[in-house]
Amino acid sequence: MARASTLARRRTVTGVLLISPALVLVTVFFLIPLALMIWMSLHKWPLLGHASWAGLANYTAMFKDPTFLHALGFTVKYTVLITPVLLVVGFGLALLVREQRPGVGFFRTTFFMPFVIGFAAASYLWLWLLDPGVGLLDRGLQDLGLASKPILWMETPNRALFAVILMVVWKVVGFTMLLLMSGLQSIPNEVQEAAKVDGAKRRQTLAHITLPLLRRTIALVTILAVAGSFLAFDQFYILTNGGPNNQTLTLVYWIYSSSFANFQLGYGAAMSVALMLVLMVITAVQLYLLRDETEA
Amino acid sequence: MSAAALFDRRARRARRDSLTAHMPAVAWWTVCLIVAALFLAPLVMVVLTALKTPAEAAASPPHFWPHHISLKNFSELGSSGAGIVRYVLNTTIVSLGTVLGTVVLATLGGYGFARFRFRGSNVLFLVVLGTLMVPFQALLTPLYSVLHVLRLQNSLLGLTLVYITFQLPFALFVMRTAFSGVPRELEDAAAIDGAGVLATLVRVLVPVVKPAVVTVALFAFFSAWNEFLAALIFLSDQARYTLPVFLTTLVTGRLGAINWGVLEAGVVITMIPCIVIFLLLQRYYVRGLVTGAIK
Image (cartoon, rainbow over all chains, first blue to last red; front, top):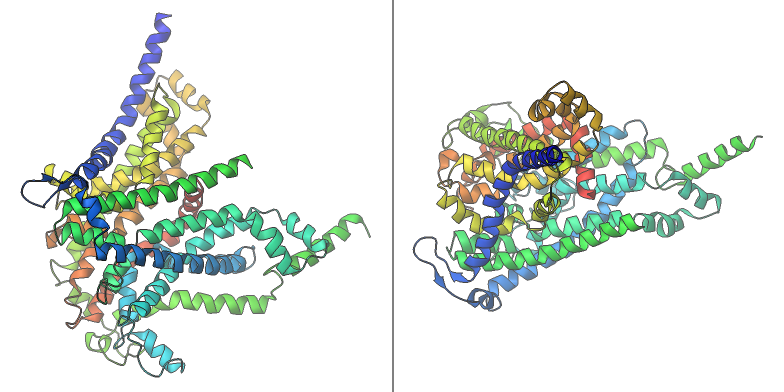
């Protein structure tokens, strides 16, 4: 009896020792900052000097801050525009490469490759590619007769947004393709074949068999795209600088500017809390959808 | 005709009719090659431009092919800021530190969570997984203050510890799953031989879960090598910049002249290690991405 409980206690001690290094880091660099974020958001918190209690002033300030409201609207707009593009292009690519045939490995690798390059490097690559003077994109479009003069991509907010979407689709659509491809591969061949034997047209099979069976993969891809786009920073910081006229400022970009350029850390923290709540809702939806999968 | 052969023919016809399999080989290759060209073109063109002379790289309108192959852009990088070697070194230190820290902590922790359950250990695991719900970007403002108090601000060590922390939830999840799949008999046999917990873990179990370790290491490497926002905020001394932040120093003023050849040479140096490592180990990376996203 005594021996058994000593043994159990020893296993507990071993378990605690094994997980404690990871827990220390999570506590110091995650849990404490999380609590501090909420505390900071209730203060006027300069970079240097003393913080003073502000109550909910930072939160009410958000709704009177035109830059915040615009950044929120722009981030939603970017997310709403890019998500369907990633889904449709990714689905097309997944259909192209889902089946095992000679050469398919090369194409899967090629379509996915830009995903492993960082956002910063990819953005600086496209900054050059899109430059009206030295960039090759405008030169190529003119050679093909698609444009008569260089396109000034960063001159209007809509063109800048289009250019960023083009770059991001190039960079991340391979990931969308990969998830949709593994979803497609998990649909038993027999299901589609049965539909064919029953005389279903290709479009009918897609609409009534393939897409419904792929519902959860599509939901997952959508949520990953929404969460990723909502947190966009690098590509806008590098390609548009938030401009012209702060028109392409995203939420994370405005948090960054408020905290580290304007040194209003309390206000930055309040906006971070708001951002966190939005993302938690998105993640909760994700968890809900995935739980559904195990029940089905 | 046997039923099996009939079914086989039907299946073959069905397969031919299915969405893309109906595409004849020639059409499939044509479409795929065009799309592949679109994906590869930016990568090929940036390498070609980095190999131009600085003057040719700045030419407007630009040419597609370099007239003279030159390493001048790369040698100029050697004298930019603290020199490209320093930035490659900084990035390598942070990336390898993140890989090492993540692998060691996730291996220990994953083993603990999988095999040494105690009252509350599941709750702790859920807390760790719960951190995935809070975006890294939201925590940067308070993290700046925490690093400041710990005197780890503007330090590669501080940045590495932050990167490890944000890799841990995924890494612990992967390692716990991997250890749970190992038959207990392996540990029992080692215990009978008198091996301690750590010796069993390192000599017996880690070789069995090697694919998971490689997946965790790759994720840590890619995210640390490429991370931009935290490095931009936490590093204030130019000599400590990592490569993505160093690239910002090559663009001086949006309206000022950018030395395009040098900037794109920097882009090439930043992206090449990622592409090479991906091509060598893509099996592990892709499997991790698919299971990681679907977890």
